[in-house]
Structure formats: C-alpha cells, structure tokens
Image 1 (tube, rainbow, N blue to C red):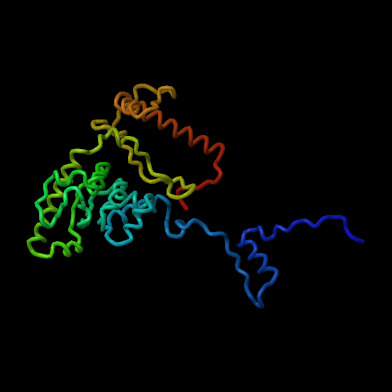
Image 2 (tube, helix red, strand yellow):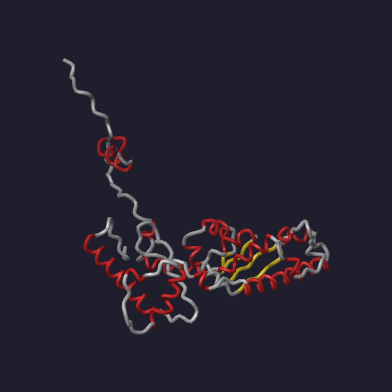
Length: 297
C-alpha cells in the first residue's frame, strides 16, 4: 500500500564540507585507517604570535625598520590599508604615480622617487630637461607636481629625494645632456621641498585623524592612535587636576568646537572620555559580547 506521506527534502549536502568529510570517513572508513578529525581553522594570526599586542609591536618594528625598494612595494601600496600603510617609514618608488598612495602612510619618514622624462611632459612649453635650464615657473602646473604636493599631508616626512631614471639615457645621450638632466632634477627637488614647506596643511585640518581599525575582524586590538592636538596643547599625561566635569550635552559636535574644548577644558574632556570607557567596560562585562576575544591568544 502506497504511503500518503511526502518525502522530506535531504539537507545533508547543505552541511559544511568539513562535517561531510567527517561523516563520510565514519561511514566508509579505509582499511586499518586511523580517523583524525580536524577542527575548523583558527585565525591565521594565532599561528605565529604570542598575543595580538605583541604582534602589532613586532610588525611595527619590522616594517618601520625596512627600506622598501622592491617590486612588492607597489602592490602593498595599492592595497591602501593594513599593516604596511600603517607602519612603513622608508620607501623608494619607481614611479611618481604611486606618490598619492605613499602619502597615505602616516609614519612615512623618508621617500625616494625615480623621475623619468615623461614626468615633465608639457605640450604647451616643450620642456626638455636634458637641454634647457629649468626654473620654478617651469615646474608649475605639471601633473607630477600635483602628485608630489599630496605629500603636504605627511607630517612625519623628513627626507625627500629624487633620482633620474635609467631610461633617460635615451635622450641624455651625451655627457653635457646627462649633466643638464641631473642638474634639473636637483632643481626640481629644491622646488618641491620648498613648496611642501609652504603648503603644509594646518594642524587643525589634520585633527580628525582617527585611530586605526581593528587588527582583524572582531579583534579588540587596534592600530596605534595618531590623534593630533593643536600646537601648544599639553599632552593628556600632563593636563593637571580636573577642576570640573562635562555633561553629555557639552560634548562638541564639530571639529572647531572640539579644538576649542581641548584648549579651554582639556582635563574635563579627558576625564569624560575615561568615564565613557569605564562605563563601556562595565556594560561589556555585565551583558557580555557575541564572542569574547581577549588580548592573549
């Protein structure tokens, strides 16, 4: 007699592949095979660090101590985020088109850029760096100049150097032309360095730099904070005694109000932040989080 019950759908193959493998190994074991169950993979960072904070400190020291010159630098800069952008300090670039990405490195201390003939292409002027003595007015309006002036946002930059590309020997094919090319590269370096000094962004425009994101998804360890205070503002460790307190309604909503708050009521502002952090920790301890990830692995 036929059953009126409908056949239920099979959800077996909707299971994760790892669980399917375990079931198949149990159902169809190999002769004399020892079944070894493998757990789901942990975060990659857990394989080679003592703790997340130790990992951040180690990578900061390693990346910051290197002079990045190989081809992988272009790939690392193209990512526009992560440990390399956060901690790189010494970089050499094979082309000026990467300067904009290098300008996003907040700790960049020294930069070397290779210049080629096409970096000075200007159909209106017919500029030939290996034949003509170039001055500051010849460099204005060049796309290369626009790219390099992005470095005004890098407050940590201490050294900028230009080198002549080897391909320029195709044009500077005599000793006199090569010397003229080298001299013009030197003049251009002086011009750019002078422009960077004159066009540095006001400190208030860079006040809004926030601390970096989490080390990886769900990590409670973040990149170092690089929040900047106005010139003359004492550091939080030397703000002195707190003379009052701030209400939530007193907290500034704009960048200008924040600057004025730090200048006028710095100790109270820091105390308010500390109270907010304490309250957040109490709430987290009482109600818990979706997943408890401590600093120690």
